[in-house]
Amino acid sequence: MKKQILAIPSDEPGGLEAPLNMHFGHCPLYTLVEISEGTVRNVSTFNNVQHTESGCAVSVRHLSGRGINVLLAGGMGRDPLMTLKRTGVNVFYAGEYPTVGEAVQAHLRGQLRQFGPEHACKDHGHD
Image (cartoon, rainbow, N blue to C red; front, top):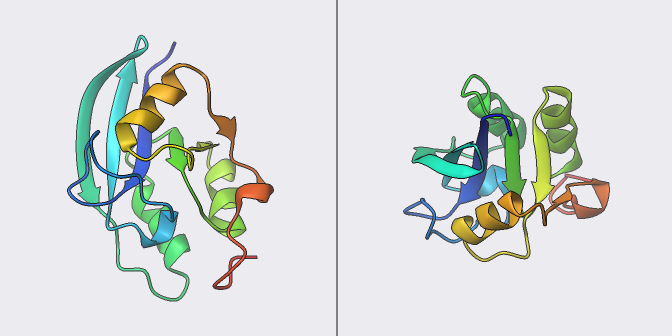
């Protein structure tokens, strides 16, 4: 398995024990998890940008340049989903897992489904 860098929308304080935040653009921070050879190698966090009008697009740009190739999310709008997919980020639905660590373990076991339009938020202008 090639090296993966996962981004997971998280509640504070971030990290593997943190609650998974269920909205990509509104999360206070992201937990980054580096996986190599099927093992978690590094965990770090970074703050999200303030969510304003078109805030999800700003969050997508904020993630770019960090080497992320996988995003685990509970919810996001169609526009950021399509933008992430176009930039080569594989997005998986992890909304059934309460913590970042549980979502990461489900990903490692191959239990997460690709995030599709059926998972996308349909409120606050994301439909």
